[in-house]
Structure formats: structure tokens, C-alpha cells
Image (cartoon, rainbow, N blue to C red; front, top):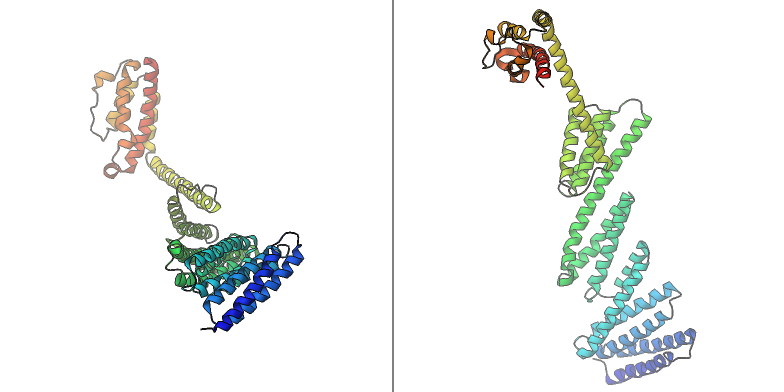
Length: 452
């Protein structure tokens, strides 16, 4: 407890300082004179603070006066940012100390008044923070953190601003593909976030943000490391293909490892990056290693993941186009291969059926105007192998062509290749049925033209 003599000395110096402060506020004085008188007032307030010598009541009053005087000087220093920030920081420091010293000593009205001034100042300095470039912004915030205690009511808010600045800086670094800067910024995030968890855990207005920061840092770190792995793999592969005539499999496997690492980092976290890595891996298997089944697996998985990103439109994304176009190309190639295989297989049976087909061609030529005879020739020589009702000979032979339409229509159905049981009767019979169907269809079209 300070002596009454020390208290009176503190009051004396504050009173003298107040007089100087008041004269500095009068109109008619220029900025230089005002600043000079305010600085003289601050000297008096500093003497008052020293004279308080542990008296919390006098200490808090002197600190409040110092805060007001420093703030007044900051208003006169707007043409010099360094000076302005210095006096704002001093203002912040003394308001904090005034509240700390006055807690439980000063009347509630006094504390409420100082707290309101303190918080209004915080809003103002946050605007000053946001005017600065990121690196300078960090310096400014940390300088204000350094002048208050961890138990100050605004300490968590400053740590929040610091963490948010580093998060934003990490995002900027990532967008510029400056992965090192992004990861460094994320590392810098940990300290303010931990401070925020420690000293802001009882703040309801910060509780949601505290939880979000942790998940944001984890997500951003995974995203950055994944993009870095993809970019490194891309660079290694591009340089190798441009500069080396022979494939270096050790390097190729290194690139594959980078793409797979990118997938692992973001699996179930940032699925778009997983899809991008799969697209890159598929392209490597497709264009470099020529292993199409592996490439197809990667591209299919890539598009499966992409389908979960709806309603996003991904058709303009290069990685999506690469996967989609490759799979379409594979489908076309598979279809062509299947058709080629069918043609080769069919040719084999056509050669084996040479005698039968010559007989059919001769009969078609012989009875081109007597469709009934041709129809009965087919039924008798090559009876259908499906359940059907074969017409009587007298119902078709010698009849006019136009009356045979329904008979040929049914015959086309009986011999149609899609109706044949390949497992029971073999592929050779199916090929023969197809050739028979072509000739029957020719007669059917003739009869159809006569009746239409």
C-alpha cells in the first residue's frame, strides 16, 4: 500500500498533466503546439504513474490519462504511419493496464467507460491492421500483443486476427503455387491458434472459430502438400520427357509415388485433389507406360469421384477432360476391336458355308419371280431351329408375290440371327441364319412394295 504522501504526489502530477492536456485541446493552436503540450502532459502522467508506487487506484487513473494523451497524439500523427502506430500501441497498452489495475478498485461506471474506450480503440486498430500488407500486418498485430498480458480481455481477439492473417496468407501462397510460403504460413498459425484455445476457450463468441481454425489448418495443410506433390510430379515428368530420349523407370516410379502421395493426403478430405491426382496417374499410364487397363482404372475412379462434386460443372477442367476423353477413346477402341473380331470370326464361317450360300444364291436367282418356291426351298433345305409353323407347300408355291407378304414376314422372324440359340446350334448356324434373313428380307420388301 502506498503512503498518502506518495498518493498525493501522483494526484499532483496528474492534475498538472490534465491542465496541459486541456490546453492542448483548445482551438487556435497548430498541430505542433498541440503535440508539444500533449507530450508534456504525458511526462506528468508518467511521473504520476511512478509516484503511484503500487497504489492500484492511482496507477489505473494515471494509465487512463496516459492512454487518452497518447491517443490524442496519434490523431496528430496521421501523416507518419510509424508514429501513428506507435502512439496507438501506447494507447492500447495503457488502457489495458488501466483496466487491469482498476479491477476491483475503481467504480463499475469508471471501468465500463474505460472498457468502452478500449474496445472502440481495438476496432480502430483492426482497420489499421487491414490497411497493411500481410507481412506488415503480422508485425503490427504482434507489436500490440506484446504490450498486453495474456489475461487481457482482448488478448484472444488479437490472436484470432493473427491466426486469420496467417490462414489467408497460406491461401494466397497456395493460389500462387508458392507451396513453401503457404506451408510456412500454416506453421505460423499454430502458435496463435494454441494461444486462442488457451485464453479464449471461455469466450462463447470465439468458440466456433477456435474449432474451425484447427480443421482449417489441417485441411489447408493437406491441400497444400497434395498440390505440391502433384506439381512436383508434373515437373519431374515434363522435364524427363522433354530432355531424355529413353524412359527412366526409376524416375517414372518416383512420379507415380508423388501422385499416389497426393491422393493419400486428401482422401476423404479434399476429394477434388484426389480426382486430379488420379487423372494425372491415368495419363502417365496411358501416354507414357502404355498400360491401358491401369489407366482405365485410374480414369474411372477419377470420374466416380468427380460425380460426387455435383452441382459443380467440371467439364471445363482439364483434368476432367483428360479422363473423360481417354475413357471415350478406350470405348471406341474396344468397340472397334470387338467389331473386327466379329468380322474375322464371321468370315471364317462364311468360308465354311460357301457351298450352302452358293445354293441359296442360285435358288434366289432361279426363283426371283416365284417367291413361294424360294421360301419352301429355304424351309426344306435349312429348316428353322425355333418353334414355328411352316406353311404348307400348296399355300405358297404358285401364288402371286403380293399374297406372300405375311409368309415372308414370319420367315424373317424365324431366321433372324437374334432369335437363334448359339449355345445349342453354334455360331455357324447363326451366321447362316443371318445370310438367309437378308435374302428373305429382300423378298419381303418386294411383296411389301406390291401391297403398299
